[in-house]
Amino acid sequence: MTPPVFAHGALRLYLLALLEDGPKHGYELIKALGDRFGGTYSPSAGTVYPRLGKLEEEGLVATSQDGRRTVYSITDAGRAEVEDRRGELEDVEQDISASVRRLADTLRDELRSSMRGLRADLAATAETARQAAKQAGRAPSSAGGPQSETAGRPASAPESGPSGEPAASSPSGPTPRGRAESLRDNRGALAEAEMLIRGFRDDMRLELREFAAAHTMTDVTLEALRQSLDATRTAIRTALRGPIR
Image (cartoon, rainbow, N blue to C red):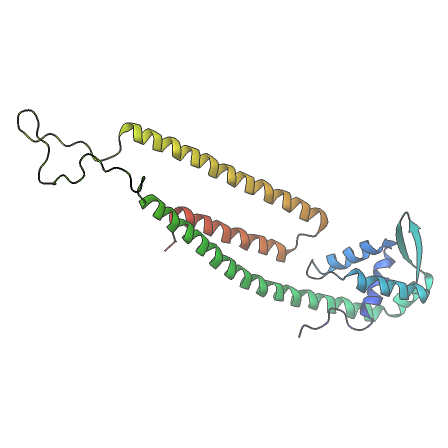
């Protein structure tokens, strides 16, 4: 069972300490708590607002309106309580630091487990796609179509030239025209693949900017991003080159 993040009464005291720095909206208090925990924990509105309401009832917090938002500020009585319990507040800070380490360890363990599953799924998907491409390459170009002119001709009876000598065999590889068509097809596929990669990069950069605008980029988040990109890179490399031995 995961221990509680805040001991009984600790969140109440910590909210008062946060308001010592100046008045704040409820959302700003929630964000300040999330930042203090390095993104590993963020209290819900249902956890914070009832405690703010109780602090107001006790005369430790006062409220005012800023448009449609309620602004909370600490009263003289609230400052006196924080000062009287300064030693307890230091203990709360130590408990928060311990909780951050514990939550970060839990998140890392969950991340490693998720990444192992993701790598396995990506590798299986890449291998399936590679095998399907292999099968498509081996499939006849026109199943059930007419046989070539040389079909059924014995291999030991090559065509004869005008003088009765065996005619020179034609090269078995693709014709110049076939090579040119293959090259054009390859260039088209390569251009499409590069377009897909550019689109993926642009999408991820947009996601990253939106995340950074609303959240703190923590070490845990950065590690999750790094491992996800490593797994994706491995899957793409497997699809292009085959499994790495």
